[in-house]
Length: 204
Image (cartoon, rainbow, N blue to C red; front, side, top):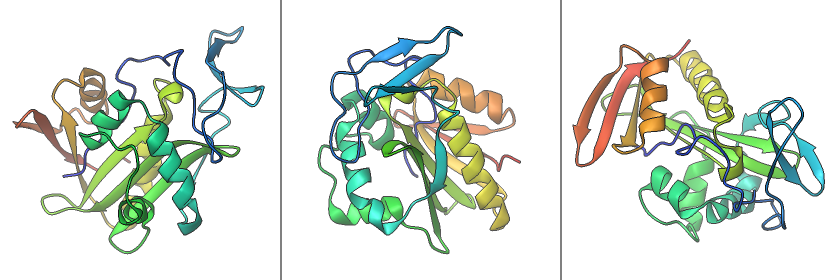
């Protein structure tokens, strides 16, 4: 089953972590708070409220270098929660898998300008119609972007006829498990080797 991280493990951006841009890592920018209390991410001197200025679009083959640098720029904790291992330099074949959109697989990117801030994918499952995996860049976690990616992914899966969804969540990732229980109160959860295997109906 695909490993998944739907929301932030900590709930708020870590000041020391910076977003990844297609060219490399954005320099010297942490989180800042706006007058309304919303957390703002800063890139290239321009502040934007995450979740409102983010476009969610299908992945494309020319996103290979962007997704490779995005993954490499994630914190070790976020990498472990998504991939169950470190992923400093993913292979070309793995990157292509993350971006594949065909009759069996779907992939979405969350982008803010040239900044890649999230990735979501689904593929045809064995025990469920689709299995999903989602990861959001460290500074953009805890702001609802993961939920936006999941909802968009589910709408696209439903149009393809999917009715059930599966995901695999680390047992200590309480934030994600709590979100799953809220979004899918009827979900079945089975603990296996330190992970929780979730089976649910596709969100409408």
